Length: 225
Image (cartoon, rainbow, N blue to C red):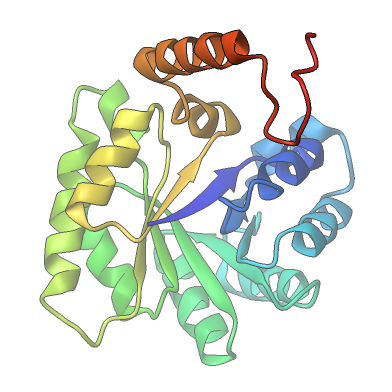
């Protein structure tokens, strides 16, 4: 499974990209607005830090406007994935941009039927929002299972399932078990995945026992002595 980071905070992106665990970035107008910076400059800077796909969303709602914005975004860098909404105009724009060789992320997917249309339109990624479904009492992971099952029936389909609106590590694990290709995570959720109380307890025990030996792996006595 690939991990994308869902943020426009360049400091967060640089820190997490340095771990080698980040395969791409997703942004949206709300995330960019939080930075208080110029949208196009932010996208260009992120693309320079992360070599993988960087999703940048159009703001127009009509096909002509989306297409013009999508082309402008795609011109920023070769790793831009233009993000369009799952609407008739969005899917039409997806097809046009895909035919031009641009990666497209079709976002705001909330049903398997919508995901089928995104794949038919040639989307590089489809983004089902699990957390937002959970918020209204629907199990978002059931949607991921449905989409993965459908896509698996058609090996020629190249659209990847990008699990979005991830709220906790449990969402990531469940999506991975279902075969989802990508999860886009808020930085806090990726950091939560590191932690387990038994890991912390075991490490503390090992370090305490090692300290008693007075040794250093790099040679000589331990620094404490």
